[in-house]
Length: 162
Length: 113
Length: 89
Image 1 (tube, chains in turn red, cyan, brown):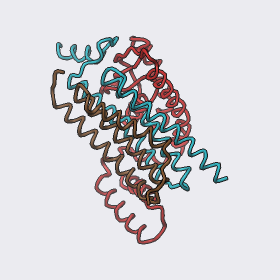
Image 2 (cartoon, chains in turn brown, blue, cyan):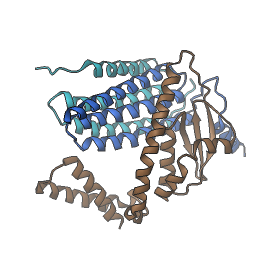
Image 3 (cartoon, chains in turn yellow, green, brown):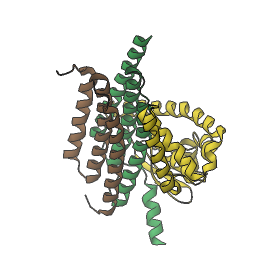
């Protein structure tokens, strides 16, 4: 099952890269995808069944525009702080808690935090805490910072990855 | 129709170039490693994604460009996370006017206990 | 024949590359230099993407994809190196 998922993913990447249906090219692609699928299946995913649930893809499509909105906001924020002559920043590292369980979801949450306004993830711990570097610290409290930083993405990412 | 699409692509590339420039200015102006990393990663990742999307619109829809957008958007934040984690472990100090450093406090507590 | 490049797009990119190089030369700690090199790698991807449109060579898109992945692996390697190395600056 894992091997089949990795075979499909690498074959789709091959198709996009070559962008042709000329059949020797397809044959080489299938061969290479089979080899990759047999060797690296354990590294790629642990729960292959999730790739066949349509609901997750729909939630992922719903996640993209929200993410883009916050990403644009983040860039305008950085532009304001960089071009301001006195640099209005008060940096610091605060601690937030996430309730996501699986590793993929936590990594996706950390990447989202890095691209959203004023925050960057510095470290992940095993028991669900994330240390976040803020360019302007609004609150040092754990619950308050969690509500501000994490709760924008957590419900959607739970639907996508858990 | 295609003229319009090319024009929209040019506008998007112009916005992306502008964000790239902002990220580089942030890299020079900000005071310490973490703030530099934060500003430049955000701006340069979004700027390069916008350039790639504008090229996708301008040059007749090569689908490889979308693949490149996916790779840039995945690898940029991950590399930033790795560099900041490594810098904190190597003992790079925060800016002297920083407000709080919970990570260092927790590391100290773990060492003492 | 040298193709005509639109300077509106290229001059800001070249300026930002030089700002990154300034940080590489000037940076007080080696972490600053690693950050600047990583950012420079992503800027080069933007250059490659613009070359696809303004020169008749379409293979620059492949170069851009390969450069993204190589830059990512390079950044991870430099981060590992930084983690081992202790310094007191």
